[in-house]
Image (cartoon, rainbow, N blue to C red; front, side, top):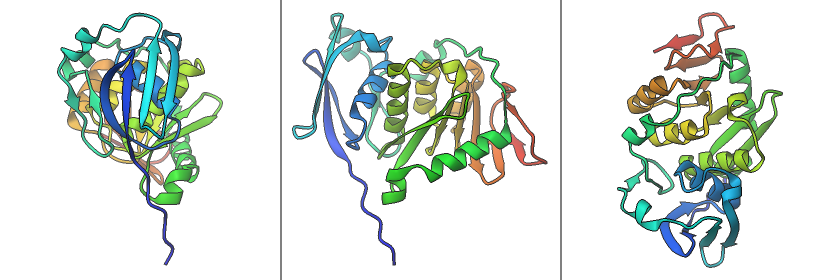
Length: 251
């Protein structure tokens, strides 16, 4: 019998200008990307340059962030926290009502279903932590030329924050990208993608009803059950072209 290693998770405290935001369960890879991505996704920063300095202390389980502008802690701590569903404990400051106020995605990007399925397969084949442990989630950005970048974590929303952090640090343009994830697309996952502006989100599993409602409202294409030669398109933005025979299921 082949035995895989156990996936790691650690409690890590995030502090902004000395104020503790929360303690997160994280995998100790790409923590700087996660920090940028989480702070962007939650509205603490608007761009990478808003962060002056990051100090990561894995031994002490802490990430200290210095922002270039004063952090108005009362503004955020007065907002209700919404604890996210699924693995890897997380918290968001955005309600579903908040997400509806995000800018709608206007990108006209159209891709063939075969391309999406091919990239989903390559994503699975190159998710090193999952292949090692069998217990990791992943998120992947696909660029226009097919270039893929993968980030992994014990929590699906953490993995998405890591890949968004990579995107904003390297100046990638959201309208030109596809986001792929191994996890269920729930409302908090959709909110992270919407905040950055991804026009297409693909997953190997399902999307929740709330996420689909938000995606339709924000004009984001959500495609689930990307497996083999089949997929389910939950939305009607027209960004996925069915170039395979009778394999595309429309919800």
